[in-house]
Image (cartoon, rainbow, N blue to C red; front, side):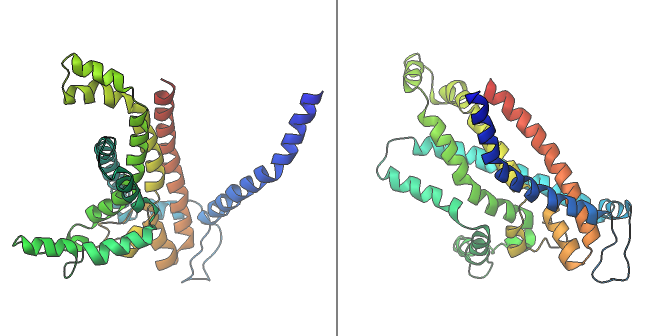
Length: 290
């Protein structure tokens, strides 16, 4: 009886939080779904009413849609490749005893706490600017012409900026995993004649399996929604060269004022993100329970 009373009290105490969470999730999603089936364009307020699947057909047949999907996948894949490989290498480096290791770790983590808008401005004006950026200065010192990163390599530039932000997160996760590795096992392997490469392949990399899964899962969820870096640096261009799915929805809603089509795009993005999340969670579940 006492146990039942405790469960009932706990449910009553949690009810407001659960209700607030449900309202905060359901109301915006239901509103977006309703708008996706309506003609709703700020430039043509006389046009209204039920639109059926017209908004979905318009968004899916937009020539920019396929380019946005490809750019989104390239952005996610490129950032994951850089952060996972770079994070493992940096984790191995910072796991070694060296002078000033604490300060080096602190500096390494710092980019993760920089706001996306600020990091985009820093890369755009201080690093990648073809006139006075640091990359242009290095190129001229080497006798090479400056590279107009944001014009000639817009998607690569976005990948580098986002990877710079997320590399500290991956490094921190891998460094934490490496510190739980049994060093006696490595020492025994070394005494048996295993070289650094063999110890990395057969001992360190399997030990990092769960950490790699966690990094891929968390980063994928956030990188699918990247917007600020594109808005500040390339505005999705030139053309649609660096437009991803969230930015294409923004263009439909606030530049072409077609709220109905933008809402349809938002619902499509939610469906695609959930498909990716289901695969990622299943992959993580298998690795974390193995």
